[in-house]
Length: 83
Image 1 (tube, rainbow, N blue to C red):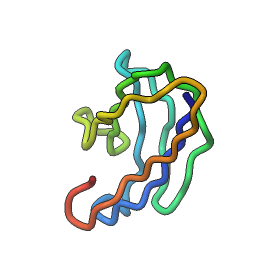
Image 2: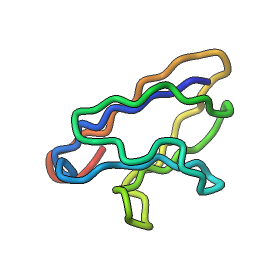
Image 3: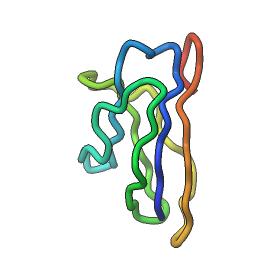
């Protein structure tokens, strides 16, 4: 599966976000506010963790069954809490 992210979270507008896989490998680092990442390849069914860059606890975790040979665009939003 191919996934890209867009950072629209006003709750974290002064911070970048990092997306990590379950093995804690950074797939996207320091994605700035109102910025879209390039597409990244992920294994079907992967769970991705979204962090404020430099923070150790994820603000969000994907709960979506990515399917092989599909493209996805996910955006992080929220004015007080990221969603």
